[in-house]
Amino acid sequence: MRLDVNGLRAFYASPLGRTTHRVVGRALHDFLGSVSGLRVLGIGYATPYLGPVHYIAERTLAFMPATQGVVNWPSTGRSCAALADPTMMPLPEAAIDRVILVHALESVESPTELLQEVWRTLTPGGRMILVVPNRRGVWARREATPFGHGQPYSRSQLGRLMRDTLFSPVSWAETLYMPPARSRLMLRTGPAWEWLGTSLSLPFAGLHVVDATKQLYRPVAVQQVRRARRLAPARVLVPAPSPG
Image (cartoon, rainbow, N blue to C red; front, side, top):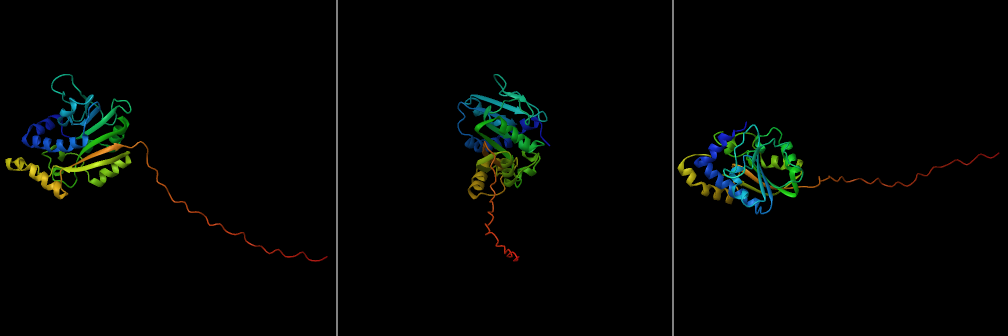
């Protein structure tokens, strides 16, 4: 089940949503790096994290699925947001340098088709930043937040999915260690939770954040071929012809 765009906007406008935006945005943009002169695409509900990108990148697009709904973005100027099927995007091959997926992978019926379409639209050497709920985290169990909807993933499940769709993880981070509580005390101590969880590599982070690159060729498994042992020719005794 996917939250609609109104529920997502309401969450990010709340105190818990603003804290989530700061924590997740820091991890995401650490992986994204400079986007000067690049073409960037956000899929799902990525617009809260595209603000700094929009003013630097050559072009920024935000595609939102029809099951979620779309909002005008940015709030001023020409809109860069559109409704689009994330498994059949209206883009030519190798048109995008960076793809950011937030509130996307966990909500689609076919994650494989989604990542195959991302692979198609990425340039050679292009990169994908995935933000996905952690199967072991508390946030995936709380439907009061957007990360409590859809299919969460373990690290091994994400690894297999990316391997099957020709992506190679370059960097991996866990974030959102603070519990999804709306109390002022919990929101104030959010940075301390993040520092503690990151320092100790605790397993219950709310989200995986993955930086992956597009592979150009599918790796081929090489099987060891057994060489047949060369056998010496058998000696056959032929009886001598009888006299007369």
